[in-house]
Amino acid sequence: MKHIVVLSGAGISAESGLKTFRDSDGLWEGHDVMEVATPEGFAKNPELVLDFYNQRRKQLKDVKPNPAHFDLAALENEYKVTIITQNVDDLHERAGSTNVIHLHGELLKAKSVSNEDILPWTTDIKLGDLCKNGYQIRPHIVWFGEAVPMIDLAMSVCKTADILIIIGTSMQVYPAASLMHYVEAQTPVYYIDPNPASMSDKHVKTIRENATSGMKTVLKDLSLN
Image (tube, rainbow, N blue to C red; front, side, top):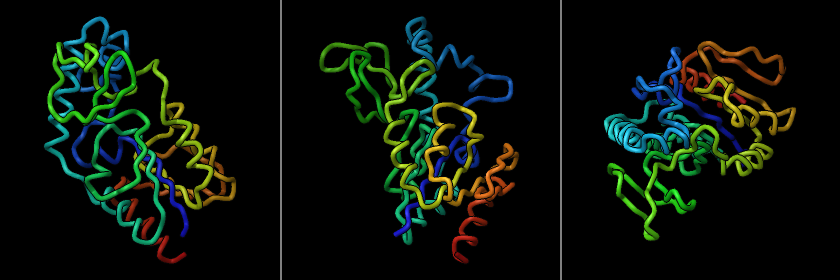
């Protein structure tokens, strides 16, 4: 069974109504990302940061997977599929995808500030919510300046890809942007983006569409191969 590896980003979630990580003005939901997405921001104003992610968690409950999510999940009927996502939502899982690697953490999980123990967490996190060892709980989000724990696994997965699909990401944020370079040189690549960056590799098929319509094009092409 051929192995499809998918690199997904904010663009696919945007079509479900979730705002992309950073708007053109550099703000995320009206906040400077350095205030709400760095260890320094959390140390300076933990209540602001906790409230910010509490709002994102509530927003997540009001949205649903879109057809692109469901089309990716449906690929599992005929392929081995691994999704490597920069998104912190659970829309891939809710659409039925069973093998999802979250590079930047997950909104519906939390961890202690003292260690990397991961906890399921679907409600608000408040200042004073402590782990069993008495340390504050924080969102399970990889902030700027922090290591990306899943990147080594993602690299090894990319080396095994028979087909690569890039969807909803400009591939400009590192280390995620480096992942496509771990795919074997002859591997077919589908790059779905309405405003794609130029890729000279002859094995890249650029699809100038949004995630939902672009996935329809990919499914049609795969059915012919």
